[in-house]
Image 1: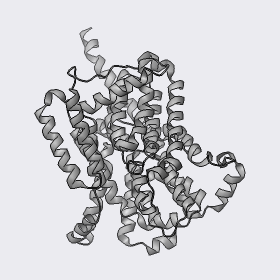
Image 2: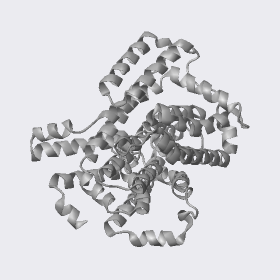
Image 3: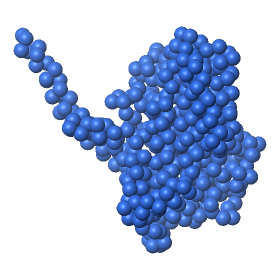
Image 4: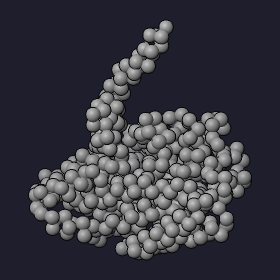
Length: 492
């Protein structure tokens, strides 16, 4: 690690420190929300810093401001000109179109028909399909679209029905993991696969035979186990009806919107094309308002800001991530990628891994499999996660999702994904082999061990922040209750 620091430039070191602060910030958003209620003089600022979607955009701005002060404006121009923002723009566009009423109506009708064939109650069947079929559809309509569709469906089915915190967090964890691995049936839908497919010569046939069938098994297992564990609460609270406008969009209009979505997906590498199609979609939506609900433009722009900030900060992490990945063995790469994904975007991780020269087929498989398996552990782990976060966060207490409880809720489905990707092709599953674990731990160098435990350190810090926040909020709540009862006592 000391040698890495010596070879890194001071700008890269500052970028790494700001990236670390941004990661800690994501685990501390509820603390800022608490400040907004206790220190009302600057409530607007604390609310702003309490928005997870703002976090990486804020710290990216800090990096750019530092570069301006330390170097000059031309340094920022050069850095931004050589940074690709295609993915944030694409996620914004596909989020808005996929969440429109015609597309939701089509997916809702399809899941309703498939649900009739399942031996489950209608609402439970739709819940199961939202966590299984829709994430797998992400391999064809892209993961951001699948995340948007599944999150909107789940919000109507269960999140708006005052479900328990256990069910809401468990559902969110399974959703994030299933969307992350559900896009690996093809070579163009999952961002971490998209980053390496062309360079390594991976096509749809290779992806399905190597990753896809294992991902499908993991998705179905996760959705089935969760549905079974919460079958009683789902039977009591889940709702089968889609709560949109009563006016259904005509089939021809649905086909027009579907064609626009398909065009955006096909042109996912060309911002000029998919932004043009997006403007056409906005024109059609404005002309036929009766067939559209409110477009989620605000949510999509917030998610785009989050991803753009992640891209800006992530560009300064190459100096240590690539060096670490190039020194690891195949098995270590798999578990290391799953762990590192919790603190960085998995697409950035696979991209940096693709820059390592002369990698073996096992190294390539381990890197991508580990990256997608760990894509549900945090909101920053996978590019579509902020989309689901933005759609569902208002359904949680205090309109905020705890990063700690998301991490813990995503661990079980992540383990299922790891089992399917790592253990299934082997005669002796190494996941349950103590000797393989000891051999792997013995092969770790100190710098990798530090990075491996970093997500756990961040989780502990988050837990401490949650405890402090809850401890400080109790006196405030009791004081508010006393004030609320004062008029009654006076009147008496």
